[in-house]
Image 1: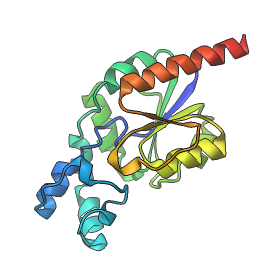
Image 2: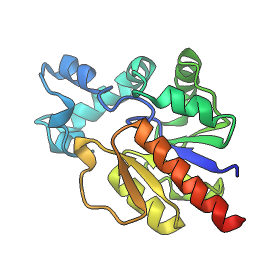
Image 3: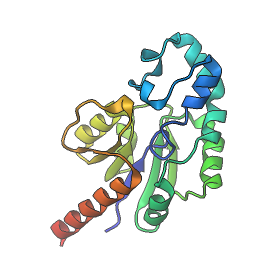
Image 4: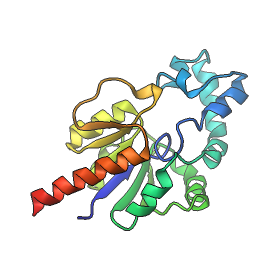
Length: 194
């Protein structure tokens, strides 16, 4: 049975290390992903918030255009595009639509819909599009979507999202694990609807 998947982009479809080389270059640091233990980067690095956000807004187009694809994402998404509705829902601002669509084209990732909402609050967008299952890397987003919409959320493990999660938030370590969980979930859903 066809489902509608809500899929975050940054840190989920793109590799969670995407920001690291850009931060290192801009702030003369030598960090790794393991150093980013909070989603709010300025809380785990000694960088003033104002300086960081001023740099980030300017650097976003370059960062997003150069972001590497998460390992295994293309294979799984290429399979799902013919089986489900793929709705990419991102906190990126809509002014980054051209950069975002160019990245999808460059990496040959097909989609049914891209929504750049300019905010981390994805609950209303997921509700509006009647999302059945969400894929996310931001812990509080995963919890809010799961609890408010009563849908499962696949949370891609990173050092910045390792807080405890409710039962409906499923932690995975790669796209292969995500695909396996989805296949099992679909089998159960299909049996219940039969």
